[in-house]
Length: 402
Image 1 (tube, rainbow, N blue to C red):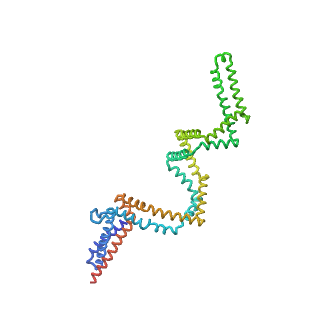
Image 2: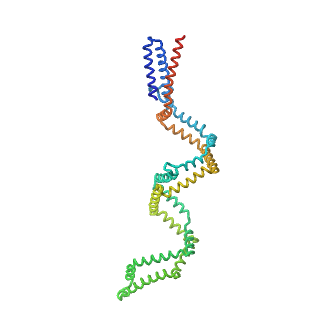
Image 3: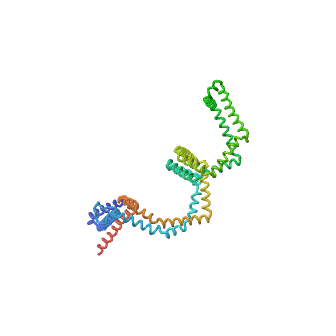
């Protein structure tokens, strides 16, 4: 548009020269000369006016030119004040939102199918959450989750819970399979380390026992006795050793629930465990596996998670679309929230606008405003050129008649 306006001005200069050259040939050339002369004046005047808004014409420091860059701070304050007075007042916000059914609009969006025919949220919820998990710093997020869990665990008194778990398990005889498993594990451990046990017995036997060979018989007796004891405990639910173990478990449960010393020991063990660097490393490895697994499941188009998310959001959209009472509550909440934001943070919002414009350099302000309205300003130059020419013709005609 700037080229068009300038080309029109150059064309008027050419017409002026043509009319001036042939003015003596015919009176009509005078009208052409008057039109072109006045058009050049109008075009040049409007070019000066338009240019003076953004820069110094021809680089000359003429007073009251380069108006926008010279007054950008005042423009920033004026824009902020206009925004605060005409848009961010509670009355204006409430009036603009009174007839808006935000709830129905949200419901329509959630129910509207995507290009693949699926619900919009079902198609995009999984990818949105997966992208969110990928965009966050995994190490920092994992440490924050760990810190939150550790903070909650530090506040949680775990000893009474363990005591209640042991008491409940024993009341339902659910501790017996655990004892059986421990007995079997001890038997397997003894079988795997039988030679070490025999060596320990031989090493501790005196010289007489070794000389007479009784140490081997003693080792056999000890090992066989241990195997026999474990077998008896395993097959006899009422074995005295089981009773001793159960008695110890009952006492442990009572101490965990009521003994301050035992509870303090458990709390100290818990704190030591939480402070252990190995636990932090273990948690980070677990968190990474959880995060990657969750991302893969979210990005699976046939997976359960996107379907569950999409189904839940679709139900919410249907409720927002059809339930008039829910719409009224959501819309009222939206209006109150918007009015509250305008009331509490209106000054901060306009201050943000003002400070942002103030931080722009003069060239940036000029380029952005000129980019927004420059095309219309070039129309002013074109109109000024044509209107000036018409006025010139009218003045020439009046002088001829008079």
